[in-house]
Every structure is written in C-alpha cells, then in structure tokens.
Length: 597
Image 1 (spheres, rainbow, N blue to C red):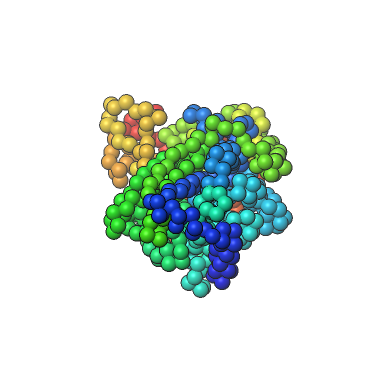
Image 2: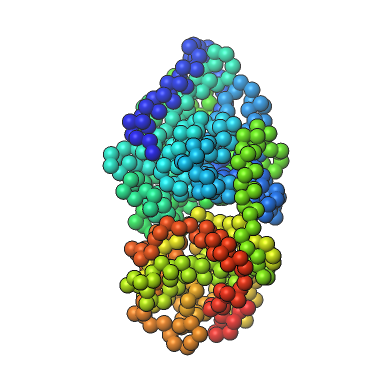
C-alpha cells in the first residue's frame, strides 16, 4: 500500500515527467491560430475495463480458444492490436489509454500468480503487469477485485506497472489521507512539433463495496469514501492545478443502485457523479460488465453534457472517446465529444503481448489440466438454478464436511450444519471419467474462502425467502420456460440454495411468501423458529455481498481456506466423485404444492 507522502511524490513526479516532455514554445501555434479564429485540435482516449485476468483469447476451463454464443473474443492481446491500430492511424495526434479496474482476478492465470505461485513470494512480475506494460497504458483505476488477494500483493502489482494506479476514495484509515494516487495530470502535445499542450486530468475512483467484499483484507486499514463526494473534492483541485480537461476512470456502474444496504456509499453512482459534480468532461466506467457505447448525462449545475462509456468485460470491447478542443480567450474548451465501441473479435492477438505472457500462460494451462479424480457419471450445472443437482450438492457436501470436522469438540459441535452455495456457472461440467482442476475451477469460479455462522430457524427461512426473489412469478398453469425463469436484475451468483433442510419454493406466490415448506431433512417436522444451525457460507456472502438478511455475523469458523481448493483436495483424497456419496435432493420449485419440474 502506498503511503500518502508516497502518493504525493508519485503525483508530482508524474506531472513533472510529463511537463519535461512538453515543447518549450507550446502556446505559440494556439496564439497564431486565435488571430485567424480558433484552430481546433483533437484528442482520443481509449478505455478498457474488467479485463479480469484475461490476456490470451483462451478459455482455461474448456482448455480451448474462447468463444461464446455471440462469438466474442477476450484478452489484453486483442485489445493491444486495436490500440496499436488506432495509435498508428493517429500518428502524432495524442491517444491516451485508460482502464477502469478489475484486472488481477478472474481467470486461472490470475489465480495461479496470486495463490499457487504468488508474486509476493516469488518476486515474479504478474502476468497482467507484463501484458499491460506492453500495451503502454497511461493509467489504471483499482477495481474492487484488486483487493481480493490482500494489500501486499496489490502493492507489489502496482509497483510492477509502468504507469500509475489510481483510487482517490481509498483512504488510509490511520492517516485519513489517500492510500493510493488519487489522480494524474498528463501534459499532452496535441500533434507534431511545436504543437500546443493540453493538460488532461485523470481521476480514479474505486468501489466502496470493497469494505464489505474484502473486509478481511481491508478492515482497520482502509476506508472507502463516497465516489460522488470524492469527485466533488478532487475535480476542483485538479482544475486549480491546471487540468484543462477532466476524465474520470470509475469502477462503478451507472444505475444508482447498490447490491448492499445503505450502510455504505453507492455502488453504481456514475450517472450521479456526472449529474452532480461540475467540471467533468467524460467518465470511463466499469464494474457492471455492461456495454454502454455512448451515454450523455446533463450536469445540473452547468448544463454541460458529460460523456460516459462502459466497454463490457474481459477485453471483449474497447471504448473510443474522441474530443475536439480549441483555445478560446486563453482557455481550452471542448467543442465536441463522442464515443464509439470497437469489438476485439475483429482483430488478431498482438504478438508482443502474447510473448510477454507466454511462459505464464503455458504453466497455467499445464496446472489446470492436472487430473484430480474420476467421476462415475457426467455432472452438469446447466439446471442448477431451478433444480437440485448433484454438482451443486458436491459443493455443499464438502463445505458441510469441512465445517463439521473443524467444529468437533467445540461448543457448536452438537448443532446441525447447513451449507449454502450459488450456481455460479451454467456451463460447468464434470465429465464422466477424468476430472481436472479446470473442471472444478469452472464450477467454482470465485476465489472465495469458507466461513460459518450460527442462524436460527427463523433466520434460515428469511434467508431463503430473500434468495427466492431470484425467480419471476408464474401463475398456476402458466408455462414456465427455464431460460426465462429468473428476474434479470438478480444475477445467478446472488441466488443461493441450502442443503441440510428440506424446502419448497412456490413461484406462484409473491416475493417474501414463497417458502411454502421448510422441514427437517427426511421428515415432515417444521423447522422451529428458535432452532439453531451452523451455516457454512462463503466470505463474500457472510461479509454482506448480495445484502442477504441475517448472515453478517461473527464467524464461528474462519480458517481462510479457499473453497475451490477444498473441493480439489476432497476430490484428490477420494479419487472418485460419485453422486451416491453426496447427492441429497432437498429442495424444489412448486406451484400450489405441485412440482414445476
């Protein structure tokens, strides 16, 4: 983690270094142009976001080139080809490249260099630093997933970058000052020898949800200020320090809503920042994984139109923002601005980026193809959202077994253990025969750790009612299409199933009244409101991710064990994955007591 004094020094150095490259007579052409009427110049800003550890156009879970139903491609190597094409096209005209965060987590490649061979132990350069340094970014904003592996690994990665990492609203709790560089101001020559210089201010904002999602890594060390208030604080300072144009790189969506409660600042405030904070020209944003080509938001104080754009995820898209500027009455003004979106499936991968990461990619491919067990039958996650499936029970069985073993001999040993899992993937499969690490990683795609808390029967019911809001309402007799069964506003990872009790979800009932049956396993005995259960749950959910009720409690178990690794360890120890060892059908969707499927 960078100290506040270190951040200040880096800020001064960044500005000074840029100033050192500026022409000595930068203002002359502009003054000459003004005598004939304002001469215009242009600036291009390219934006990426949510690359999530993707360098190669490769699906590590399938051990094949990445492809999806829309034939998207992924990876920094594809982005680099587009960026280099635009740089070549523009020649001496300025082109900046920014990223809006979530960079070092999301693929087995990224996990390998955080967990199997962590860069904090080996000193090796992280693959995402290798790739991004070849592309030559101008700045990256820290996303919430940058904090997944702890502050030491984050600091090491930042130190490996050849460009600044920004997060103005991540505050050192001890000092009250920014823990990272808040912004940079780049002196940009507008094209050719003796061209004028434009001072481009870039402000980075990270997501306040880090305080919940990575509480174990940041509690007592960092606090996360409101993104709107932080922008309102720094934009005037950047203007005072000479910024002619201000671009925010923000890791937050634009919906104005949060996946958590009101105890933290807004998770997705980009439209509100544009609306409420004067002096912003454009916002590159990420976090929601949406493709927003060009959206203008009117600032209520100035009436100015703020350009916003979000370039999807994983390196599938590249935002291109184009600005036309002119110097009028001694000040630079933006005369026009627009954004377009480029698709990385139109280009080949950049060979220099591939070469920079080839050894690390090859090592990761070899690791994820390690066989851990044999499966007696094929197990698929395709129906796990709406049917009780063996592959999701596999997760719950392992979690239950680990917690029971850990609590033996404690005051909690006599309590029944329930387990919670979400259907993270619709495509995960354990094939009949050899099951590899990539198959397990494809089922459990997040780097969550296992925890446990105590809930009452009433709290378990409330939790299940909240989870059941995932489903749309279908009247008795209405056709239920599995492809259209869920509320599109509730992601799959925010729907949980629980093992250890039997229950029915009546999708003909209103949200909040859907758990029509909740009984002890294999009986007709209702779960008593005051009964006590130990609940095995991942750290994301236990910390408040998804805003589920009752679960944010002091843990009775927390050994910082990664769930994916626990699944791998169980499979290796058993040698065989057989549903007969763990599949317990305990829940179903119903209407008026009649099963839907």
